[in-house]
Structure formats: C-alpha cells, structure tokens
Length: 164
Length: 432
Image 1 (cartoon, rainbow over the protein chains, first blue to last red):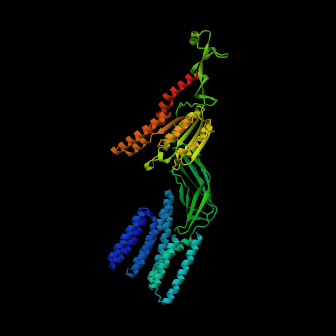
Image 2: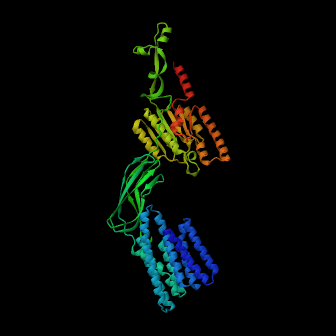
Image 3: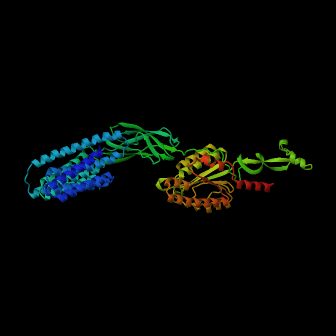
C-alpha cells in the first residue's frame, strides 16, 4: 500500500506543477517538471532511495518558483505537500522493508497514514486560514517576523536534534 | 544530510524567499514542513530501557532441521512507538516461519514475546544482541540500542558414512586397531614364517613347511593391526574452491572431511584436522567420540579464505610424527605438487581426496562447444597433475561430486592401491 501511495504522491506533485506551469504557457518548463517526476519514480523503483531528499528539495523549490510564474498557490501547495508525502513515505517504506512481519507492517501503515493525514490536513487548514488574512507590513516588520520565524524554527530543530 | 536538517534548510529558504519577495503565499508554503517538524516533537520516542531474553529449542542441528527461537522484550521505561526489533541473522540461516524483525509499539512497562523458526546450512552463530531502533511516526527522531542476549546455534555438516578407509602409514601406534602394522604378531592376515618358539600356539605351526625341513618347526606369523596417526588437511583456499555465481565446491570437501574423520575415528585411530581456509585452524589429534565432536564443531565453522599461501603448510611434528598418514582434501588448483612431494620426503604417507572442480564447473556452465573445449583442456591439465601426484607416491582419489561420496570412493578407499600393496609385499619380504 505504501508503495502505491508513493507513486500517487509523486504523480500528484509532478502533475499539479506540470498542469500549473503548462496553464501559464511555460510548456517547456512543465515538460521538464513532468520528466523530473518520472525520474523520481524511476529512482524509487530502482531502490535508489537516497535521492528522495534531493527530489523533495527540487520539487519544493519548483513549487516556490512556480508562484513567481503565476501558478495558482493551491497547485504550489499541492506540489509542496505531495512532495513532502512522497519523501516521508519513501523513508517509511524503507523502514517497513526492515521487518519481515506483514502484520506489523499493516498496523504501522495505518498509524503512519493517520499521522500524515493529520499533518497534511492541519497544513491545508492553516494555509487557507493564512491566505485569507491580509495584513500590510513594511519590509522591516516582515523581516523582523521572518527573523522571529527563523529563530523559532532553529529552536525547534535544536530541540529535535537534542532528543536524538 | 539528516531529515531534520533538510526540512529546516527548506523552511529557511521558503521564509527568506517569501520575505525577500514580500509574498505571503510563498511564506505560507512553509506551513506543511513546519507542522511536520512539530509532529516529530510532539510524540518523539522516550529513552529506551529495554531488556531481551532468548530461548533456543536446540543448540545443535543438522542441515535442514528446524529450530525455534523464542524472544521476550521487556520495556522498563515509557511507552515506545514504532520500535524496530531486529534479530540479525547470518546468511546461512533462513527464517521459515514467523519473523526475525518486528516493528511494534511497546507499552510502558509492558513486554512483547514472539518466536520464529529457522533452518540453515552448515555454520555457527552466536546470538549476541538484538538491535532496537525507536523512531517517532514520522522518522525524525531516531534512537538506537543494542539489547544483549545469549545463545548459540551450531548447524553441523551433513554426515556421510564410509564403512572403511584403507590406509597404510609406515608407522602405527602401540594400541591395537585395524591398520596393518607391518610387524609380525597377533593378527588375522598371514605375515610370514619363523622358527617355532616356546609359547607359540600349536595351531600356528605350519606343518607343511616344517615337514620339508629337518628337525626345525616353523610357526605362521600374522600381521599386527594397530591404530595410526592420521592428519586430515582440508583445503579451504577460495581460489580453488569458489567459482562464479557464488557456487563453491567447498561444501563437498567438508562432507568428505566429515566422512573420512568419522570412519577413521570409528576404527580407533588418532585423528587430527587442519583447516586451511579463512582462519587456519588446528584440531589437535585425539581419539573417539569426543574428538569426533570437536572435529564436527570445527568443520561447522570452516569457511573459505583467500589470503593463505599453500606453500607455507607446516605439519607440527609433535602432532603428527613423520611416517604417519596425511589425508589432503582439496580440489587441487595447482601448487600442491611441491608441497606434497616435500611431505613425502619427510616420510608421511599421503592420500589426496580431490572433489573434481572441472566436472563441477562444467555442469554449471552448460553444454556449449566452447565450454566443452575448455572443460576438456582443464580435464587434461588435471589428469596430468593427478598422474604426477601418483608418480610421487601419493594415493589420489578423484571424486566427481555428482556422485554420493560413499558411493564414489567405496572402490578406491576400501583397500589400498596396488602400488602400496606391492610396496608392502616388498617390505615384508625384506623384513623376512
């Protein structure tokens, strides 16, 4: 089941960005994105899981860049969310392969998908809530907020690394 | 790059790009990644305080037999989610029922028991530890522990029985056995005649010869049968045993070593073993069932290796005195002729049991004309080598491993070869 979800996530991620870019007449770029999606699927099929992090980063950056190309923010969000799903599930798939108990694997799949659904669901809710709030900020205020955000993320990362 | 670092880098990049372009929608794209990180923080694994207990249904099995391993993992700490418990197994053991790795949730102060069944080829394995890897559900925080356990499993080599191996070393030990000792005395086989001495049994008087002599009575003398010192050398060099495609003729050499050592020990001989493979291992000579057990255990651990040079084989005199019997079990890849000639000059009686690598490899490679031609050339080279060995006074048994060992060697090992019998006759005549 996890394998199928990975294929679906990569396809959805690449498909959303390809469609968004093609709709804005960036045809050659959209073909490149589609090819990158196929390449990611091929890498996964060949068991080259170490490239999933790189593929994830590339698709997140493409999602960002696509916003400059006037692609719909929803499609860009789909690009980020589905690439995150594919990257996470690839790691989870590797972990499942380390157990030879099918029963355990099914149980863990259910728990993992529940947790992922929660994260993605909250992300979508948060995103739609955030995009409806319009606040006009000066560059200085935005920069201050950005620094605050970076400090918060750094503190979170530090906490997570200390737990390892 | 760790998963956390990758996520953090991407979040920083999104935020900086969003602020730099004053694009709020772009900053909002970081939200799924931030929530993903927060989820890891929310339910990360606690400190692992686990212990493991292991029970194995049998410690010694034969190849093909199954053994059940019971494991009990106790969690002495807080609840752990998604713990991978992995019992590492060597390649020669295969799980046929159950699972050696589990991915489970462990409740606080709870325990988990499970079992799995193994089957294996020849080898030995110490179950020293279980790997425990705990992660949060999103795999951001990973904690590892090694849980010490105990237990050993020995898969002994297959046993092939050979009824009798006819060896004729120049020197035997003092204890009675079945090896002809080239000395007159108590025995079954006729050895010679000598003048009657006081105490000789009247049954042993040779009346026919005595009647032809004038006033002298002759007694029959029989050949004494004693036990002998036998050193078995198992050649485990990778270059002569291992072939392409992971195939190896070494298992057949091990089987031959088991059969030969068992047969010789059953006849009361003092048998030692030298394994010349991954690790050079001497099993000092000994007698009986205990020695058989030691040899079986060492053969269970035998592996091929590639660092050794066969020229350096030195047989300690204190273990095997000159004139004792040495049996080399080797596919004979070349370079043995000098060594064996040297051993002959030192007085050892030599026998070579050689699993045939040419037939073994040719069968695996198929039936194409080029394979046939190559096999023919290799066979000729091998025949030349075997002939040179025979000329050097070495008894050679060429074993095509497609045939069962006992069947293949019955004819050649049940009685000494003609040249040895001739030597013995000559020696007996000389002594008389």
